[in-house]
Length: 116
Image (cartoon, rainbow, N blue to C red; front, side, top):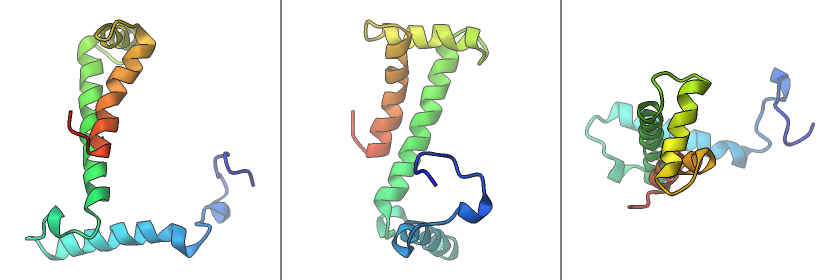
């Protein structure tokens, strides 16, 4: 099986080692601890970077999506997205391709925890 192909067979959908599965175990254990202790905060979490990164990426994604929707023609068809990307790219003196990077920047920065 090639590394870059999508796995369609359920029998092939498995982790290659126990170490590869450990991150999933950590997140599930952290979620269990949070559900059982309502006073628990992210500072007390065993994996604050993972949780903060996921939260940041989610917030950045929602913000970028809302910006794209607002800058373009109403709707998310090709006719609506094209002017939105062009308007976002124009903020940095570029076109639609630059707009992709402009709208992706908040996701990347918030996921990495970088302050702007």
